[in-house]
Length: 152
Image (cartoon, rainbow, N blue to C red; front, side, top):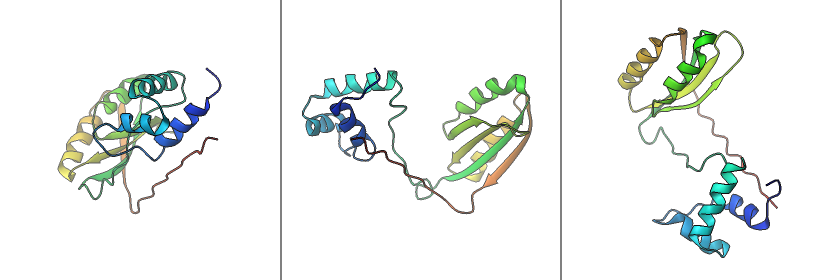
């Protein structure tokens, strides 16, 4: 699949900011698009498999929910980079885990409900084989980028 249909574009536009908050959001979206829920879900799976869609999710104001965020930079032995990244990904509060060039070659954000839990997780990560150094970079100001692509 290389071209998006009119239906696909309408569906992707809805997903970018108009997912209904209700018990059956995909049924409601299907209704808005003049189809049924099963057809919509099949199309979403196809769009994901074709690489047009990476994830469906929401953003929460983590601070208002009582969570604190930390950007973490790790210096990891190159031979252990994949294993460390996979281990970090197993923590529910770890997000945006990515490799970077330079001495600190693995970066991720960590959202935790309190400082004690953050310290526990970071201590465990710091003991992983291949982790040589860690930087914890607390945010002074929160920036939220909300990019939406209007598909015509």
